[in-house]
Amino acid sequence: MTALWIIALAICLLIIASAFFSSAETALTAASDARMHQLARNGNRRAALVEQLRSDREALIGTLLVGNNAVNVLASALATSAAIALFGDSGVFVATLAMTVILVLLAEVLPKSYAFNNANRYALRIAPLVKICFWLLLPLSVAVRWLAVKLLGPGSIEEETDEEELRGMIALQGRGSEDAQDRERNAMLASVLDLQEVSVDQIMTHRGAVSMVNAEDSPDAVLRFVLTSPFTRHPVYAGKPENIIGVLHVKNLLRAIEGADGRNMDRVDIAEIASQAYFIPETTALFDQLQAFRARREHFAIVVDEYGDFRGIVTLEDILEEIVGDIDDEHDEELAGLTAQPDGSVIVDGNVTIRDLNRTLGLELPDDKAATLAGLLLHESRTIPDPGQEFRFHHIRFRVIRRQGNRITSLRLWVGKPGRKARPGQTGKPDAGQETG
Image 1: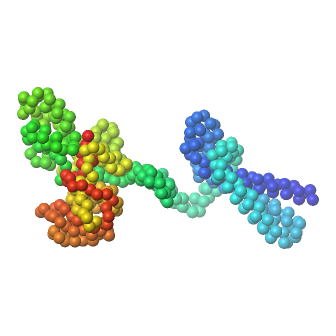
Image 2 (image 1 turned 180 degrees about the horizontal axis):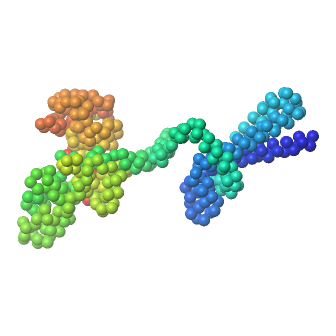
Image 3 (image 1 turned 180 degrees about the vertical axis):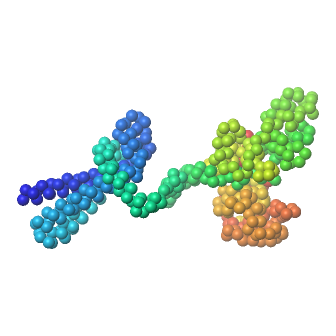
């Protein structure tokens, strides 16, 4: 009889140990990384220990699982032995039923529920004891992991990148949220991750829509031009628009004219006061370009293709708008080149970029094959359409309105009710393309 009481006591201790391993696994997994990091920075040794344990989560979870399964198997074996001594052959069934209920309820459900609801506090409390168990069981855990790799192969462990995990967390955070601020915040976070996947040619202002200055024009003509322009920076070309020789900032022009005192204004050399142009390839990722802008303290870059030909311009504001959405100031218009019609359709200039159109009208047109709406139509139709021809792509009806040579200059789209009405204005993107203000 004494032996049975010893076995019963051992089983109770093993169940307590199983509850400890189960709750420790849950608490150390669910505890807040940010909370532990902040406490560790403030000198909390237990928080630092939690961070140390979680630095190798695979080893930690493996060790806890080995300990948990070991005590469960041992408790079940002792219970079966005791039940057979008491009930004979039917003791196996009695022990199986009793231990299943006890282990599920007392060693799994209740401990894990408590640990999950008090993850931070409980993780700090048990960290020292988990550390001891970790080192005691680590050799066995390493042996089990080595055996698993040998049996299943090194490619059996699926690895998840930090970026995939972040995207999943953002998607879960925004799923079902009815708060507009939450949706905007999640969209910004997702846009930050997209910066490495989007290249500058997808957001640049195409050269056909860039407001440029001819270095051979008179200073008076250049002054009148920039005063009517909403932009503060203008590429300067010599001879032909493809020959970019610099970038003119309005402040530099005004300083030069003021220095000429109005009497020698014709002596102002536009090419001389223009700053050196910063050229970048069209395949540059937005994240890399953002870093380059910061390092060079630049706001404005000339985009060229693989042959060095002028393609367009991109600014720091363009990249920031990919993260936070449109940034408007007192000189900005709504998306230029887009006019809402009474029948619900919209008339769009062919050189309006697909990303701007998607953002303005809430569309999901693909921008991986073409940067502008005209380019998308040419790609999808595989022909150069005539005015009046209609197409239907991506659940949107397109009609070509005007064409100049081989260039589509205007289209009508039927997309339902647009997200916001646009006002007619200068072709291009004044609110970001060349920086206003």
